[in-house]
Length: 310
Ligand code: NCD
View 1 (tube, rainbow, N blue to C red):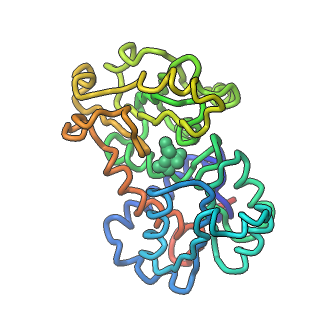
View 2 (tube, rainbow, N blue to C red):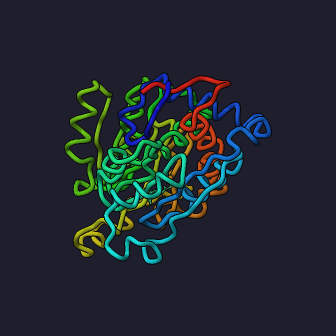
């Protein structure tokens, strides 16, 4: 497959996902084999919103496959501050780089950017839209523990604004996975996401109580309430802190239940979970490097391995 852009998880087939995850396994087993593979290539990091994990793991991943990175820097220090449009910014950056990683507060920003440039664009989060490279590392983490079929997954927290949730839910429809969505009524999955899931025939249920489904779950994917996306801060305070788990909560879960979180966490997973055998979130964040190495290797093109089709 040769994939020009990675914009949404819905564009990924089961084969696409497995190809990248198989590559990620190879990378993790023998990172040295990838060291000089993309020498001379340049990856542009364009983050119009805060980021720690996504930006730093793309940066590390690029360097570990021999590529260099250039960083647009914060919005405050770039020409965006002077009123430059996103279309102009990416058209200029296209001349400096072989691929662009873009995070932006507006839903649809990556789709728009991809229309203006020929180099691959990776959507590293577009508002409350999608975050597909996060999904690949989430799937890798799930796969290494449980495989990706005959699974029951609970996704809890801010399902309305959580872009990692929207991408993960879409990608999981490629596998035999029962998806349970747990949130307050006001933060349930957006109608469009629910519609798309039903269209694929996905096995989906919604709950307001974790207890209802916890004993069935193989994976519990917890998310942060996305404070920055609430039009009304009072509404945020009404739901903040409602969906919190601690080590006691997990007593009712399966022994091999794994707890994931895209991070950063605020208070939705108590620190006492960290020391339990259920916690996977730090490992999950670390998996960002081999998975993004595999993704960049695929997007930048390689003569030695599988190609990703459009
Ligand atoms: C997530 C994001 O930016 O959507 N973070 C990440 O990339 N790991 C989740 C979040 O901010 O809550």
